[in-house]
Length: 92
Image (cartoon, rainbow, N blue to C red; front, side):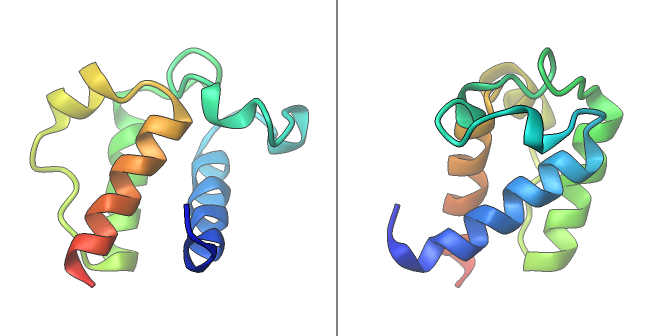
């Protein structure tokens, strides 16, 4: 990831943990991207949709066009963030 994306990456992590029941401080920077959205952070489909909608509004990007693919293929925070960052860069 380039240096220009670090603030955006931090914003995304903050938002992910804001919606989660888990505290970000419980995890190290080295392990955080391997965490599962659903198992480790206790996300369910409703919380994922809430997160995606808030990111769509903030960054003016379409993220919810294929929810089943997201749920089936993007389980870790790292995978999810890579997907979101790519979508945001595509519209910039």
